[in-house]
Length: 334
Image (tube, rainbow, N blue to C red):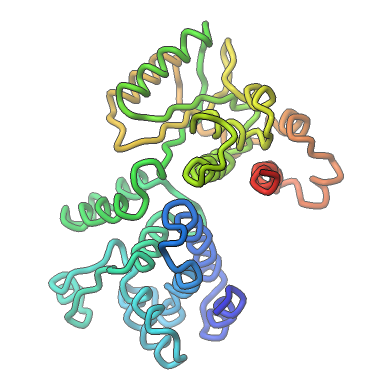
C-alpha cells in the first residue's frame, strides 16, 4: 500500500486536513528514523503505511480510544493485520493492561512490540501537530501529567528506537566569541570528556532549526553508511548545512569571532544542565529563538545560490525548504 493510497483512505474515512497533515509529518519522520537507524532491519513500507494510518480512528473521535476505533475501521477495510497493530499500539509509548482498564479501554496490553510499531509510536511522540519537537521537549510536556512509569517507558522507547546519536539538541541565540581557535579547543575538550558531538555555526547562514535538524540526520546517515566525505560527524554536519562537498566552503558556515547569531548543536546521550551551562558560558550565550525571522534572507540566498526567480516560484515562505534541498542534493551527488 503506497502513500497516495493511504492518504486516500484517510480522506474516505473522514479524517480532516489537520489529521492528514499530522500523519504525513509522522510518516516522514518515521521513515528518517527507519533509514538512519533501522535500514534493512525494519520494513520500510510497513512503517510508512502504519505511520500514515496510525490516527485513522480520529475520523470518529479525538479521545484516547481513537486507537481502538482505528483498529475497528482498519479491520472493516481489510487492512494488513500488522498495520492494525501499529494503530492499536501507537499511543505514547504504549499502554499496559492496568492503564487501559483505568482509561476505560478494552482490558489488554497496548504496548508496541515490533520495531515497526516502536518506530511509529516514537515518531508520533516527536511530532506536535505537524512540527517536529525534540525528545526532551516532549518529556517536558508530559512529565507533569503522566505517571513516572509512563515517562520511563517513553525514555526506554526513545533509547530503543533512536539510540544515542539520533536526537540533537538545537539552540539558537546570540554569542560573543573573542578567539575562535581557543573556543573550538575548549569545546572539543568538553565533547571528548562527555562523549558528545558539539557544533557551533553562524546563525546568519542557517535558515532555521529544520535546516539544522535535516543536516544532522543526513550527516548521521552518511556516517553510518560509510559514505561520509568528512572524517568526523561535526564536520559532516557542516557539509550538509552548507550543501557542498567542498570542506573549505563548508567551513564558511562555521562560527566567527565577534558578537552575532549562532546555532549550537549538541548530540549525545542525555546532556546534563551543568554541561550546557559550561558551553553557554564559553560562548557568552544568550538564547533567543530568531529561527523564524527573515533578517538573513539576502545572506542565505547569496551563500546557497538561490535566485529571486527560484524563490518567487517556490514562495517567500519556502526559503528554508530551498536551503534544505541543497543538502538533499549533496546526497544525490555522492
